[in-house]
Length: 184
Picture 1 (cartoon, helix red, strand yellow):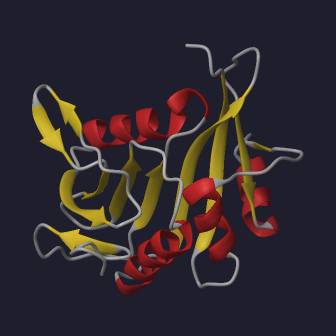
Picture 2: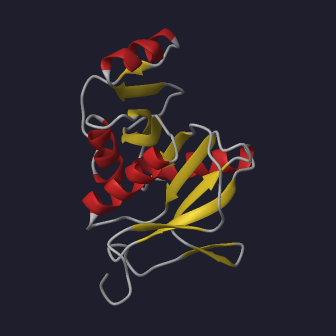
């Protein structure tokens, strides 16, 4: 801890029970696809906020919706604990290893075996197609559902760190990507 701030910890708002949850996560990136997609999932599935990530590496900021202050790095769950969502609505320049490790430790502790990162790929044009990047077995499953593998690229930040660390843990990581522009 530095000045009362932890390197990274998940502050749970209430004790939640989980049932091998699939975790959907979205972070600031091309076209804000991650946070927009996660906000949609939260709304459509009526997920409830269960906690937030505190870290000395988060820039001093907050977000607000309809006048209500909210932590910028939040965790949600459905009632049965089978679906969780993680949303971060700010850019994180430092401490990514600690943050990634904290998220994956929490996921493992709660029985999760799969994290799905929703993100955008910078492109000049949009279409209605999704692409994926994952380990080979999961890519075959995605292709059988008409989701093509993205030929090449890289993902940075918390999303890239989570996917990279999933390769050495017992959590399957996959990213679903859509074309997005940085222009609006």
